[in-house]
Amino acid sequence: MANISIKHLRYFEALARLRHFGRAAEDCAISQPALSVQIKDLEAMLGAPLVERNPKGVRVTGLGEEVAQRARDILRSVEELGDLARASHNPLIGRLRIGVIPTIAPYFLPAVIRTLNAEYPGLDIRPREAVTQRLIRDLLDAKLDAAIVALPVSEPHLHEEPLFDEEFVLVRPLSDAHKPVPSADMLRDMRLLLLEEGHCFRDQALSFCNISATIPRDLMEGSSLSTLVQMVGAGIGITLIPDMAIAIDTQSAPVCVARLPNPRPTRSIGMVWRKSSPLSERLMYLSKIVREI
Image (tube, rainbow, N blue to C red; front, top):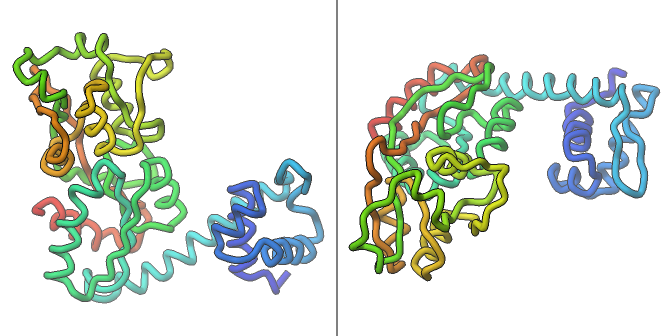
């Protein structure tokens, strides 16, 4: 039992989370045979099977589920030991792992990184772009220090620090520039282009238009706001984008931008981190800098 290592726990946690040897090996950056050997070693040390192997995939045993949860707790504590050491130094020196959602990253992150690199050269910024659900999971697993997302996230273990609010704007084909701006009720009957499922901005757009996400509709989806704007320019429909995306995404497409009638749709952008993080004071200081940017 004394021979169980952090490596064993990390590999098994990945397997229990992904339920697939190949994907777990890729997640851990090792070969699948090497991962299999490590899992068998762990089972031998514990004296009981943790997974059931079959052609369709992997099923985690009851003991395996308990071990996986303990492994996550241990791995999180190990990560926070490093955070504790970093927090003892200058507040803005060392590694900073920050996640950003895709509807913010390309428009806001470059300015943040440029400013921080210029003013705090000792800060090693490691950004990651992903949807909110993935960022929250990585935050809770201590794989990220903080994330910039749309609030609220309503996760009891995370602190939410508001940064700013921004409006959504309507993007229409350039030929529609002379037409009256439609109301939210009118948008329900128009061909609204949305981001694919998993993006919180999609849910916010549906909510503003009072459209149920479960109702089948003839809607076209895109993987990015830029793609949606280009489709609008091609005459396929209309879309909503956040204010910060106007300067970048509307320049290369024949579209027009309109402010919607009051009450205008908005979103609140904030920075979130674990309440238990040893870096909390540092991250609060950082959030003030980001807010100024």
